[in-house]
Image (cartoon, rainbow, N blue to C red; front, side, top):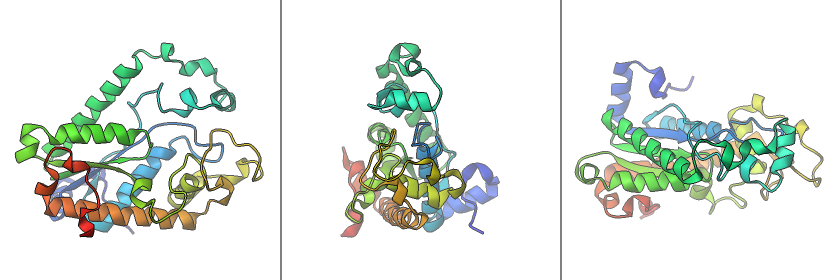
Length: 271
């Protein structure tokens, strides 16, 4: 059985032991969003959490509870912005107008700023719990920009620059796009394969139309009908390998990542 690495599932002494061995906190962030008829609606966050767990088991550290909520519901969301958003709404038996900006209590800018504050708050919580490195693992691709913005601001606090926790953020496909053609998609072969590897009982490829027919709310170079758990396992393992190396280098060489913008530098461990 895999070692338990979820922070919220461990007793204090267990957390202390793992934190002493590797003071890294992985924080998965995602959303609730349409991912085709074949995948669960929590697909982004499930992928982020699955990758974070893999990283912690491979390289040490602990995984915080995943964040499904708080991001903008009017920007970077299939239900609100996809060209076939009305078809998505019909499949969910919802009025398309449910996702109009005027239905939200906050403007798009207010929602983005609120999410930015939330990420800073979570990073500060991880710092207060004794971690030296806090890593935001983005499952929903648009969130990597929010995560990086929060990381930059967090790391430039006076306390962080001299004494505090270092923060970093990543999304799986950007780490391995030099290894896999067609890395990253929305609910096509890349993401569907991940879910088949992580949570096979949640995926039903029989819900897809025959290959070549139009797809609703799905985009990518690898057809979802060609998804396999084996491919998902290979890509997740490759992403975890790079992420763990990045984390280890940051722990060992924190000064390299403390300067303005330096926390976004990646691949320095390659030499």
